[in-house]
Image 1 (cartoon, rainbow, N blue to C red):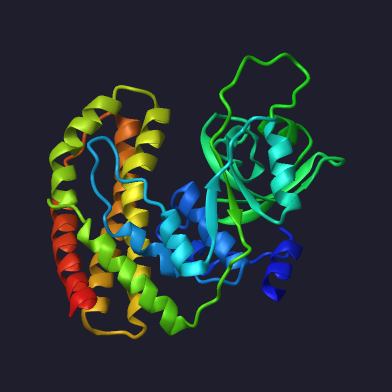
Image 2: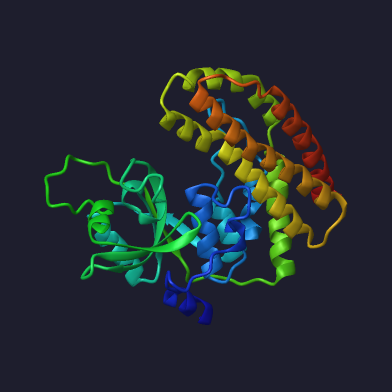
Length: 328
């Protein structure tokens, strides 16, 4: 198919990221799994908005916000894409080569320490697992092209050896990474109306799984204790906490606002009211990240209760309007 040929011909130098990763957003990056799927679908000329109903049941999980991601069932229904777990019984690089030879896309957990696109955070500074989608592999040149976070990148030489554990020095025994592969043989490009209808059915399922208790109110009751736990630790703990909690929360509601507008297809009504409520949660979450940075630097705990009260009210309003949109 022409679109698939265009996908395989893509290069990092010419690739234009999806608007959901625009730098002007409150959260231009969300989590590695959501972000990589946005760009894979965009590269395949498929609309990633359709799978964002997965953000609806987001909840406070006691020590983090839900790490939201699309289910394999949702992806199959919307796009005809099949995702299967990749069983690692050979060196990872050999499995990657095998899947690419079949025009499949390997999704592999790697160490961000070796990913040049994380310069300024983890690259050559800290070790963190993250998922990349490998688009092309050149073993002769020790290089790959890969999707990660909000873009499409090159990696080579020492970094190539790092992510595939090919260093010459002796290495300790390692557990194999979690990996999947994406099968594209049955990719389907539905009309916008058909795609919205399928996505609406998924949204209703996800809505039925929403938290039974307002998750922002629940989170607000615990946030002071969280601050007491990490304020006595190093700044790295703040960054880890911020990513797992406030950033996931804010990013999920920003994407949910985009999703609701896309699903409605026109401004006004319950969709606009729901989207505005979810967008306001994202805006407060972005501000909270800055507040938490000041807490981390000053070691003085701030009172965030008012912010969480505001977000909790927005969640109640947004979910009520979303119910009207989904069920009439």
